[in-house]
Length: 384
Image (cartoon, rainbow, N blue to C red; front, side, top):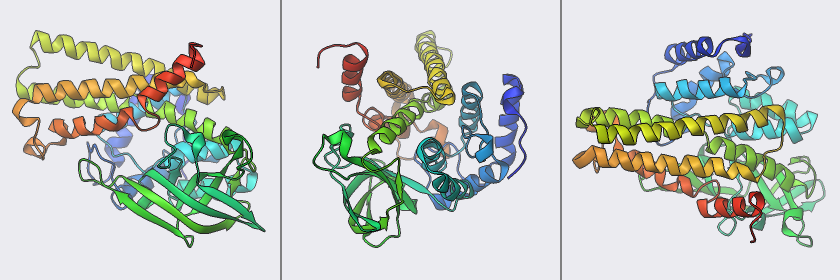
């Protein structure tokens, strides 16, 4: 691991220049401007470069191998990587599990799992959603029963992003059926090569396999593969959901889509059309507002403040904005909007891929309808 400079002491302009030079210098010979997620065998070279240079975990403390960036610096990093079209790595370990272990994990768990995330030895998947427990996550039925020094797990998880590439998965499992549903859940760490774990890929509209289902059939794990204590998983789950919804609400998708919209508009000859420019600038203002809102929530994470139900507005804002941008993109692309392959092989001109990519964003991470109900009840204090 390299000794890193104090990034936060730099001016924003200096750090932006550094981040731009970093990605342009170090990005390996793998695809850029991809809308779908690359699989581990494709994106591993970039993951390992980030790891070797100490840039894999922007928000982790430096003592644990992170960059310890402020919210503003982290946002700049995201923007520069997106501008270059850098592929998104398998980041569930760095972005989700790592921060959770730093908050709730034991010393032994941190010592075991954090270095292996940094090294790429452990690639993680998230096992939260089930066929009957998506937005209502507390309804999970996947069950873990204590048997001596082990937990025995039976059940199913679905919509596990890149779960087929992972060698570990963290799950929410029901460990007590006698209490209210939020109180009987535990947070468990499961190796994917344990006997009884099987996966089945889910093909999306673009015929890509970004998601999978994971089945547990009498899977046994050591008793100490639990984070936060027995029946205390809901606190960890809520913390992780808050963290996840912050980053699902990041402006990177919308900002990248605006860049692609600009390329398509120039190709279509409408870049200087005043009607198009009015619509484009309005969307650009929305992206700027989203960036400011995102930065405020990342500040909360950095300061250790609680992420409340109001984070739902960040996710709603981002997902609906992304869809609006994609819809204008399709309109501007005209007859090329339905192309299966991008014009001239340039992914930045592939309007249909952006449109399809934007469709599920109002569903995953909590559907927009559920998010609006949450805001109405928990933030506006409206009746349920």
